[in-house]
Length: 80
View: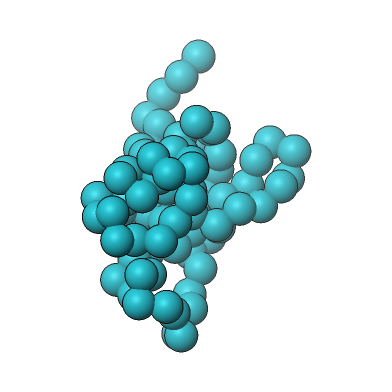
């Protein structure tokens, strides 16, 4: 798992069937590296989130048929 910040929504008009009904977000690490994740929790730009990666990301998406290797697992409300 990693802690990343949501940068923006990612809009794609043409998608494969395994990603048709999913929301996508562009995430940024502290070093500035960008990644795209499936978002089943409704994160907004500026939110800090934790991610689930690898094969577990498909389960975290709530549907094993979603083709992803990075899913937002939750929105972080607070940490010290």
